[in-house]
Image 1 (tube, rainbow over the protein chains, first blue to last red):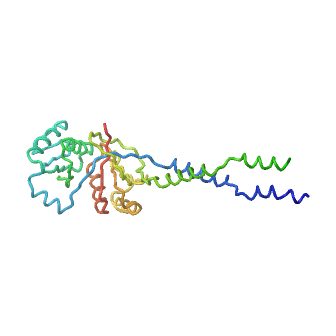
Image 2 (cartoon, rainbow over the protein chains, first blue to last red):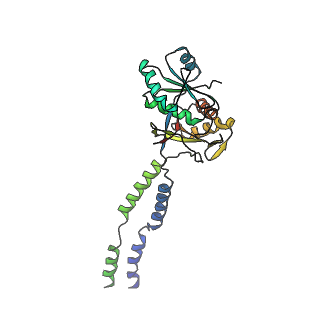
Length: 137
Length: 133
């Protein structure tokens, strides 16, 4: 009689206990949610010419050359330009020659703030092909 | 009498299978979308811009501090070692692009060092980080 009673609880125990697996899965889930990095980088693309391209670029006079000197002054066509006026100047030169790209020649000790200012101005003026040339002097 | 009670108890247990399915699908989703971005490790004062775009596939962040130190993967890196560091990280994620977080006051010279290194390694897409107004 007693032996007859036992099979019921045994049947119950035969089912796999999912709780430990659930624990593990939940911990993995939380780990991946927490480590999911939600980094959203914003920035400006750089298109840097290699040496061959640079040779060609130098031969063509059609591009807009922007020079940044060691004191962070911006020159276009050898004229000193106010940072706020860069956009208007590039716009004008771009209208004269729509196929030219902007080449930025920055001095080694100029700050990157000025570089980004010029890149941004050029993009605002509608010129998206920007090259950073080897710094002159 | 005892037998009926046992059966009732069994039926009142919650069925966990659908929840397990959902949890597994969430788990797989988070594993797949986990982006393994290599952070630079320092905060820089980003230059302002108006035309900055989201860099979708950024995988390597390189920071240039105010004092012209280059930081890659939470470590300061010598200018000579930048190329090797980029090469190593680029191998892990060959499709990812590089975002250079250059401080406003950092020199152009340091930026060129990083740009040259990225070019030498063969990373196609390089961007300079800026803050959008």
